[in-house]
Length: 113
Image 1: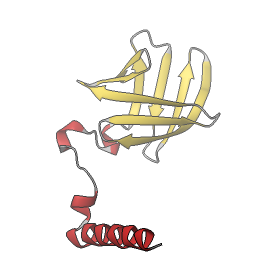
Image 2: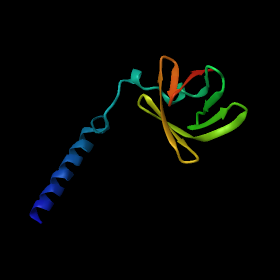
Image 3: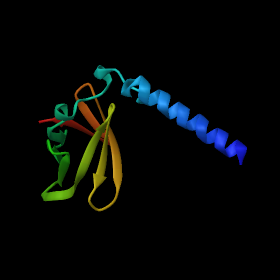
Image 4: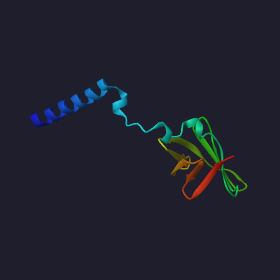
């Protein structure tokens, strides 16, 4: 029992020191240049052949059209550091990354329209 109380008090002291140090120590930060800002990705992204059109909206939602099928996939997305994480309304997830003006998701490469 004494060992359990000691661990608990040590953990509490560690948490207290992080809180006292401020949020900049509690969260690892990436260089600003390495992560796209949320509004930097907003807009229409299209594959080279125009078959897939991915609209990233400012409210954190996306709408993907494929060929003649409008709204083939819909969901929300989050910008997490340099990555975008997509949560489709049907339940699957995907990750993407923007480098040199190209958004890559799975095997697809999108350019802003």
